[in-house]
Length: 213
Length: 199
Image (cartoon, rainbow over all chains, first blue to last red; front, top):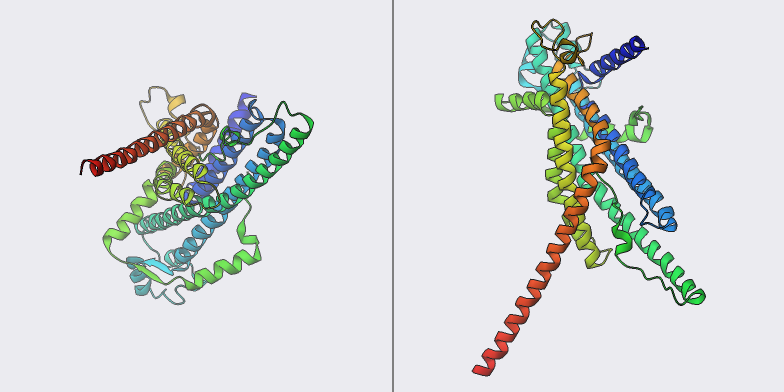
């Protein structure tokens, strides 16, 4: 049993080292999405176990929270992935290339079709028999571009797109909620005048819309 | 967990192709630029990423909330206060947990051939059998993955209560400030009236 667990753990370690050891941008995107999913799940669990929220409100808030999470995750994934993808492609094809690498390839006559889709800087460098140190330095520059692109993408998606979209969605939901409560109030007035129900800001205060981790 | 690959969507592919064609060619010149990019590639990981996200969020999100004309003024203020509280709490816990997890993984990923280790089993607990392409990146990735698990707990125990506490503090301060402003206004008004009478 312990042996099996240990071999599983070793497999996980190897997968992580193979998958993310080379590509820090990929790791940032994957852990970012996992973080969003987990924080949204925590929010939904928080609503489910909150006694201060009525059953009717829960029925509204849980889908709202799920929709909020979807907006967050989709925008994060699409924008960040696009930024990373384009930056990686530009580095792979040599559209963006460090000067020393360009000069090296020029000297070895490997510069033809630079920047086109079929060009692969790493393969050309291998063909030109580049030194290990230069290759490692070039890969670090590629990682740097990857991290900058991923971070820029996540800043744009998390701090500009998501709050703007969320505000539109939240205000629409709030209006719907108030209308629903107003209807309920009207019904309450008719059926039980002793316990009227009023809408107040506190109805919306005891739950948080989204918590970023 | 399998992340869906956007490359399988044709419309996405077309968009990426278009953007790719529009971006200009760039020969990265200058030792400083290359050195900085190399440094970023090696040292910037998820904690720093979270810090950058938090700092930029403070510069943008509260203003988006404050200028949201779809809701009334009070809701706008409360929502902006909550956003600031959420960013501060989230960034503080997010950065700290990620940083500490990566540090812990670093301490427990000593190379297998290291001599004189005090507690070999613990100090090589996370060391992979196959050497990764970059040990530093491996440690950062593993630390970040572990921090996600830790954050499911800290999210509920630290993040959420801290957000609530800070929101209440900001809203209370805002109300106090409004009262003070009202008081100042009345004082100026009264002074003007008195001044008029004295003249």
